Image (cartoon, rainbow, N blue to C red):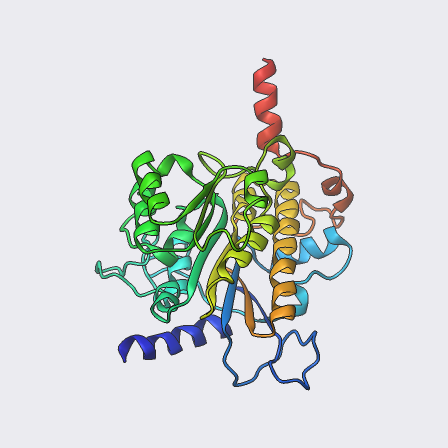
Length: 349
């Protein structure tokens, strides 16, 4: 009874609030237009896809609109905002902000779905599992990073990624796609495969996974975080859209429905690096992943898609330094991140 009441409260908090939030819901009634993008009704949905562009705020949305040259998919879904400050700081981090989004409770910076006094907090993913639904986490960071971690693990410090990895398996998350292979020991991966997980480690192997082949899938495509979208062509890693599409395919095997969280992790990392070209390209990659989710929702007619950024990173603005021009064309012409260019220069020194 407590879990059921909490689940209703949590879903309400999640659906109506976010720093930048989008809701896409195709009404299940026959009279509803197929492209009803902000359609509120009292019907129940079978699947929930929670899309998180980490570090994304209204300034990123504005810059991306200019970068794209037209309104984004996110623009058509905008409905509201929320407060994501942590329990111990006005400036939140992804662990505290993600915990608020996953559990409906505030905690201290750095804590993963644990309250400030050390109690484990019940998450929306765990609530979905208790309802018999399949669950999945997708990220371009390590899959043990703060945002994916808050949905399926409980640790006092986000830095304990070696402790988070086994919890993701023990908590029976059906699909795990992202980076962070170094945090999964050989024995843990062997156990996972014995428990029915299929393991893939590159783009081609992910693409070749058939929907009927497995109900459980782990894709670990990099030892650390995956490549930024600008640098992806230098790797054999899948895009966020490709991972999202495959996650949905596998999760559909559960007739009770599914909960899937998809994080565009590196929008945040670009903000930390103050690299606007990196940021815009990863927002573009996130939008393509969102389009995969919306396409499925349109076909399925029983799926809720939520878009919610957790906080702003880097203080992005349009223009600045006494100039009114944004010089968007410069960003469109950049073909690599600053980090990649710096690493190439170091190799040549």
